[in-house]
Amino acid sequence: MASITIRKLSQETKERLRQQASRRGCSLEALARSILDAATVNTEQNSNFPYNLISQVEPGEDLEPYLQDHDQPATPPDLR
Image (cartoon, rainbow, N blue to C red):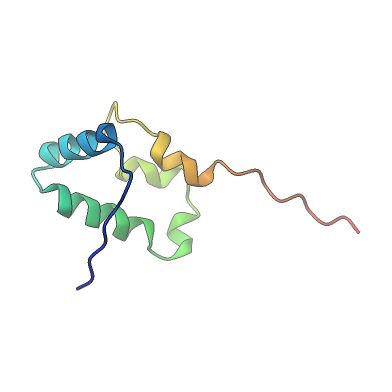
């Protein structure tokens, strides 16, 4: 299996992830794997944004990290 290191992760984010893992009864590493697995499934499932967040986010959890990837201006259509 492969390993990765995530640099420059804020202490606040790490703590929120640790607390979420604790609530779910799993390790921080297992939670991170499940988040990454869910984020990389086929694009059909990801096209249900933001509805697919319901299965990933705990009540009261900060949504900002999940929304940053989708906070891009849409490409304007080519009207030529």
